[in-house]
Length: 156
Image (cartoon, rainbow, N blue to C red; front, side, top):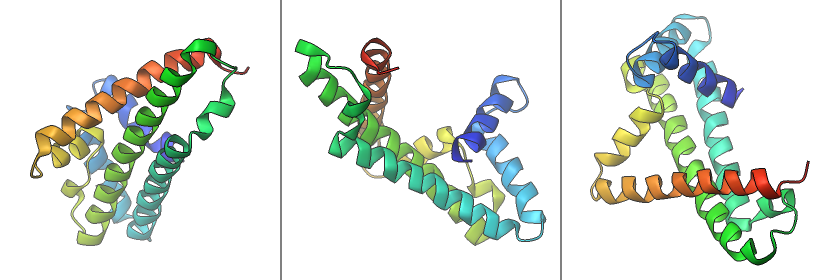
């Protein structure tokens, strides 16, 4: 469900249905707030996205993702570090998006709901935000590099 919501947001953006994922997420949030029990559903969606973020961070910190790989041999240490950083960064970004959805539901203001770009803008507006964004960017790059390593060394 979590990735279905995110995939829908990105698909609307990619098809030109909105200018950015923040607008798409706001429109989706506004529609849900108008539905019976919509606010409760948004809180549940936000909690699910936060849960997914915690899950990714947990898999990264505990390095449980390594069980999905064949032995990468001499690249093992690099793959472990890149995967750990990448999973943690992905977890943080997902958790921020989930929090923003819950804030929008709690304040009944769909404009406070945003997609991935809104979550990153929120991080950037914090003290030392530029450093937070740089760390997240580096982490997401690490996740991409880990994904390539998983394509090479993954157990299928």
